[in-house]
Amino acid sequence: MKLLKLHITLVLLVVWSFVFSQQYTNYSLKDGLPSNHMYRITQDYDGFIWIITDKGMSKFYGKTFKNFTIKDGLPSNDIWQIRITPDNKTWFFSKTNKLGYIENDIVYSFPLDRNKIFFPRIIL
Image (cartoon, rainbow, N blue to C red; front, side):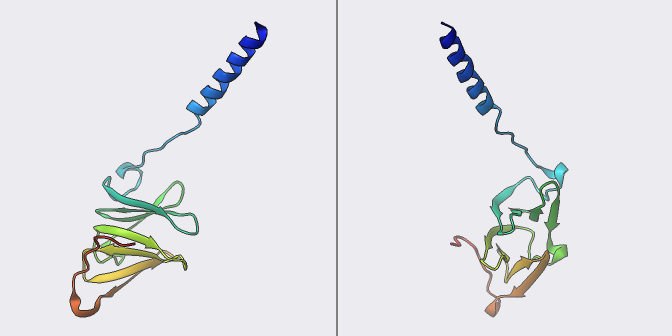
């Protein structure tokens, strides 16, 4: 009987530890994000988390956010897609006639050929 109580106690302790092992934090405007409407979240090769929204991009430093908008050189605040290249450039795609990337927290943007609007439907 004592052995059964010990097993039940151990099982309950294991279940209890799994129930409370995952702690989630919800970040929003009050924490520094440019918008609560997020399109995508990805991680670069240095471990930073990038969040694209309808009002700009954010780089998460673990506790704080650095936001990038048209004031920083983005062609549009409505960024639709993001890709990290092997050289750790963070490329952004939006419905504009410009393309660009962020490297070392500096935005590089350049026009596309023939002034066509780039419409990022699917980017693999």
